[in-house]
Image (cartoon, rainbow, N blue to C red; front, side, top):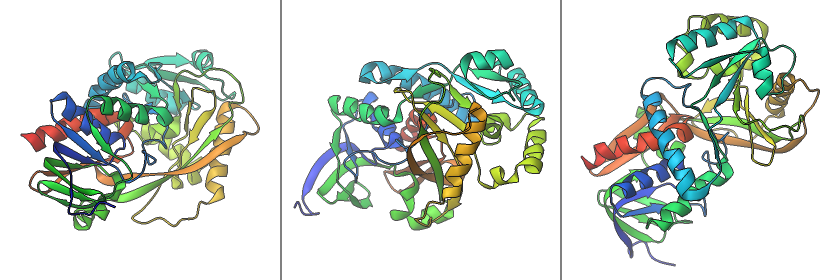
Amino acid sequence: MTSHSGLLDSVDLVVVGAGIVGLAHAYAAVERGLSVAVVERDERAVGASVRNFGHGCVTGQDGLALDYALAARHSWLRLATEAGFWLREAGTVVVARAEDEYRVLAEFAGLRDGQVQLLDAAGVRERVSTGPDVVGGALLPLDLRVDPREAVHAVARYLAERGVRFYFSTSAALIEPGEVVTSRGRVRAAHVVLAVGHDVDRFFPTLAEDHGLRRCALHMLRVADPHGREVSSAVLTGLSMLRYGGFAVCPSLTEVRDRITRESPRLLELGLNLMFTQLPGGDLTIGDTHSYARTHAPYQAEDLDECVLAEIAQLLGVPTLTVRERWRGIYASAPEPFLVAAPAPGVRVASVTTGIGMTTAFGFAPAVLDDLLG
């Protein structure tokens, strides 16, 4: 075993974490001609970057997140071609199952010139098999889909081909100005980016506390498609409107929240974002509930999965669904949407803290490097 004191590598930038945020920083650095090493404790990315919907939810963002998402969209399109992974430019269908939800979409379309196409009920059903309660919807054509089980690993391979040195199964033990001490030895670097998502507190606990960092746990499932048809778009619902910042300025959103509070308060208690995407093989990724804590209990409550299954079955107009897999995702959560901090000279902590890492990372990372390198 290599001692901690041995020199493992020397580069311009070392990135700790090979999830999508870490890879985005490595990609942005390579584009600037820097030499890069990536240190990852597991033998491949297994966290939030692969436990998600693979949904680039561009249009649903607002403010800085929208700016990052639009920039990231260009990188995803380029990377899909150069790294050779599956990507669909099929947008997102937002299904409205109540008149107040459709009013939100109409208001949203008025605010986003050309980014929202309203659909009647027939237009929704042309794209998605749903139950009888659909009143209309909208298409968000800028949104993207990738297969998260493939895309993150494909990006890592592509970066390795471009000269990024990956040290998998290697834990970062200490981060200091000018170097990272790992379980395999020291990596010297003029600049360091810590991109470990919700695990910032493992390295800088006071910093994490000061920024209000918590862990958001999600219940998600993979189910057989009961209709056996291709669903090219991601699919969102009225509950999704309550979770994405882009809809927050729509006056009718208050009506949606008040109605759901009266009719189904349990769904709001669970933080349910009722949505699904289709994997390339045809199965659906469905979810997802949200709960917040600095440290979560290890027990996965069955009633949360039952709630997700029942609500998706109702959305699809079927009595039951066949479950293939279940899992719990965990991502960083904080009051600010993007955590950027400088705990030491030449070191940046970078974390997407709203569950939109796949959507924004490739726009977020260049901004972090502008600050770090500038």
